[in-house]
Amino acid sequence: MRHVPYHPGRHERHVRAALGERPVSPHGAGGLHPAPKWIPFPSTIAFRRREFGWIAGAFKPNASGLPDVERFWRTEEQCRLIINRSCHELEPPQLFDFLTGLFRKPTVPAGILPPTTNLVTDDDDDDDRSEVLQWLDGQPPKSVIYVALGSEAPLSANDLHELALGLELAGVRFLWAIRSPTAGGVLPDGFEQRTRGRGVVWGRWVAQVRVLAHGAVGAFLTHCGWGSTIEGVALGQPLVMLPLVVDQGIIARAMAERGVGVEIARDESDGSFDRDAVAAAVRRVAVGGEREAFASNANRIKDVVGDQEREERYIDELVGYLRRYS
Image 1 (tube, one colour):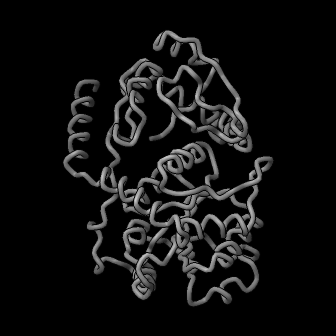
Image 2: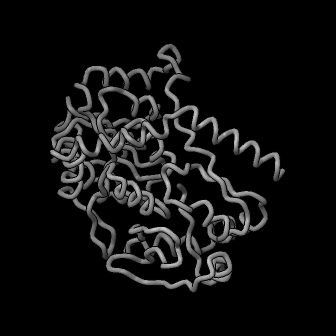
């Protein structure tokens, strides 16, 4: 499921040719660009107005001298085949046919390519990984929320403080993987002391798949990068979602629509959030009355993506496409 950005001026004529319909661009409440009517399947997923800056940024030149959007489209125009890390079972009907018409070339699923936890044994763990896993070994089943927002999360000092104070306010056990947590001002004064015994702030590398697969972990607070999202749901973890850039908001809404978690509430004018919103979302997913429903829905997805025979069929079909178009 890496969602395709809609670029009205550039691809409109191709979509009209593919679908024989005139595109429209409605702007619903709170949404920047809801699904146009020419998309041939129902969807309530939309960008939020506060995410406009994320999208606009992709049209600005970066260090390479080209905007990310321009690099994407140049690559797409020069390739013969487009491969998506997804599967029919997780997507709307007709999606891949629609994308094939949009791009005017075969667009095919590769399967989810779910993570595996059996490639690393305890004997292979370095001291850092063992320490984290040993701490988890001492926690009750499904009692810990794992927090990881990517290595380049664009969070301000205030965002980090509110996130930390929200975890404290929620009163849950947590393992927070964060870069340089000891740097001045990254965490609120006294936070680690106040949460000692039920929370760990970890500033070194974490074996994320091993952590998510651990029996003590019962929820995942994530930025909704597609790789991390797949790892979470493929291991049956309900999600607390804090999307930060580009397509992460769309991914978060798709996961919420599937009932596997909730987004942290934010101010629609500037995207800010506070500790109360963090605590409310964490409690709802990790300890509230809805927890079982979120976990059940996550486990349904786990069962789908964990079907090894189905995944192998996707790979076999992909190999056939690669041979045909190489």
